[in-house]
Amino acid sequence: MSATRRAVCPGSFDPITMGHVDVLVRAAALYDEVVVAVLHNPAKSGTFTVEERIGFIESSLPESVSARVRVEAFAGRLLVDVCRDVGAEVIVKGLRGGTDFAYELPMALMNRHLTGVETVFLPGAPEFEHVSSSLVKEVARFGGDVAGLVPDIVHAALAERLATP
Ligand code: PNS
Image (cartoon, rainbow, N blue to C red; front, side):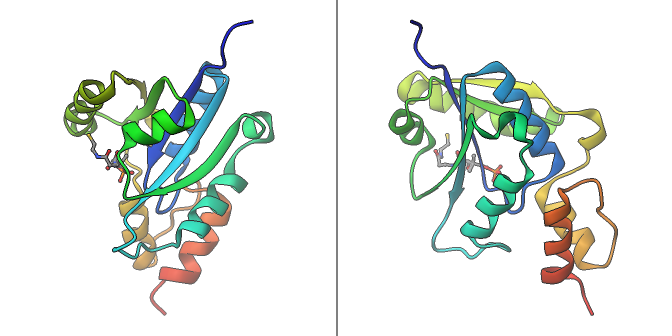
């Protein structure tokens, strides 16, 4: 019997976007198990609490993959230690373009330097190339419409948390 092939998809997920959902679903098609690692800094309060972020991720995953994807929070940890603890051989990240690659490459090289863990990059879906957690928050804050760019549950939460009255 072959060993379970497990991947870690790390991020802040404050909040999850449809770009993230696309990458998580595609990672689940490539690996037996996916651990979505919500990495956060306890000293900094995000827009959403870690519990809210986890809830949004769990309820945004299609049923077809949810049995093989689990979501866990980690604070003040190196990603390589998270990978070691959960028994993951690979990190999976989405790339929206060259700017993402320039940001991600040194981290991928550093992570491989530290423990040998590899990073696999998936090309982000073109329809979400302009989508980031920070940009959807900014647009939502000033009343812009981000429907379709984030899961419905996040769309509602952004309106409630951020929209200027
Ligand atoms: O969603 P983000 O904010 O782009 O995610 C970045 C994240 C959390 C994946 C990255 O900052 C990270 O891996 N942090 C964990 C700490 C760590 O291992 N730092 C060294 C990276 S080489």
